[in-house]
Length: 585
Image (cartoon, rainbow, N blue to C red; front, top):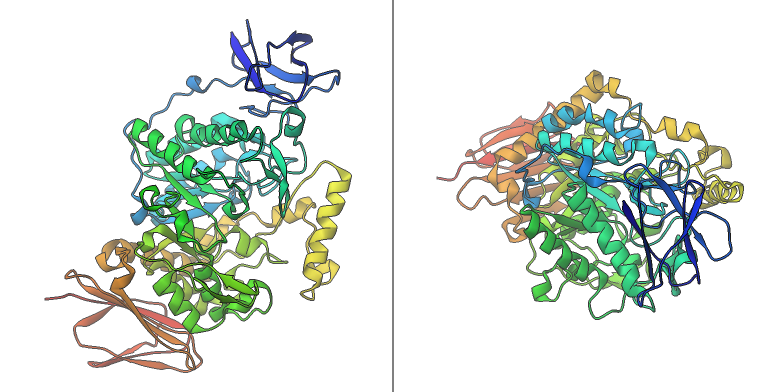
């Protein structure tokens, strides 16, 4: 027997359809819920809801299994059937973590969670501690990034369905790898969203770039909040996910006394205590507001960490000149030095791009509350042609950039394939089943990049299957030429980060950075507090750069040959990096 329940305050009548039989649900109760227990409806039973006099069978908004896509009937799924083998599992602390973002569909030729298991030993050997999965909730069609889903409780069949995610996470934990799942709590996708038929999931008080905003504060908002809280807890409790990456939280509009994020962090802490293992929440935020990651006790929301876009933009614009958009606010070494020292470049300063003051200072917070990166799905996939960094700036500069990120005091995040300078692009792709939506997405993409000088033929059609297949990694490259060289460089950097205590210190006060704007070099000093200092020397200029150096320093890693080291100085050729350590007596 299963009890079927649905929150549906809008319809006057709700019926449950199982096979050819319709059952009238009991309700609504005072909170708008309808319920009915039905015999012989265990794991694998297909069902749907019929509202009022419309004969259309709608999927359950809380469906755990959607084997036939966003428009199909839901299927009963019993979490207790899976046999876990990760008893006693504990993830690496967030402060000691190295994250690896991947898209399941493009990560392997097969594009499934089961096939991704075959690459876990590779990731463990690389030195990754946390795998960040782009969204796996059910979405329209056979391919997509996952940010336009509707069935947020159901693992897409494109990747293997709910059992496949459990097999993947179980296999990750067996190899010492934690899993962070990307979730979207700021909007629903445009195709397959039937929530408004059931209740006020959306509000017209606010708007997001992707459509209607979620109703977190209006009438009925309590049940909408519960919808997402229960979803978050499900991933961490029933799928053994070690944390969530919260997409674009700046588009979550909530004026409640207890903000949605604050309550989510509180409920996550209770679950973490109950399960006796660390659970993390990582936000993507455009607000430059440290309250996101401050503890609830000090007036913050209690989120564990957030992505630092200012770090990326400041570093990227040193490496590659690209006018327009938010990059217009960056481009100088002083911007990057501020990102290293203060996290946010715009922490109350005037932003030309926004034409207003933006952000507030980060005071008293460890750098381990912030994730930094050279590339991620947005910074690669939202380029017209999906170019990766090495394709834009070349091997030498890309190796320098990797060295800077992996020796910074922040938590590093890699994007799949960057560690071997993958030649394949990562493009924006989708597979909407409504012709009008296909047209709008394709034409919108071309219009977006026309302003940057791209002709229609230069912008891959996101709805074309070829766009997706071109984005799949070519694993045969890892043992070849420059790809093998880059992979060895990343492995060495990660090993060195693990080896030198100074590189694991998140206290920003223990780091100093000198730089020369004109000649484009930087000298980053990481104090080891009695356990050995580290210097990261980087020359991104067109001429050799010479740095004074005491004889107590030795070179741990260098990005290329041609570095000259004497008793009192070291000279770096253009586009090179050296990491030096010094044992303190």
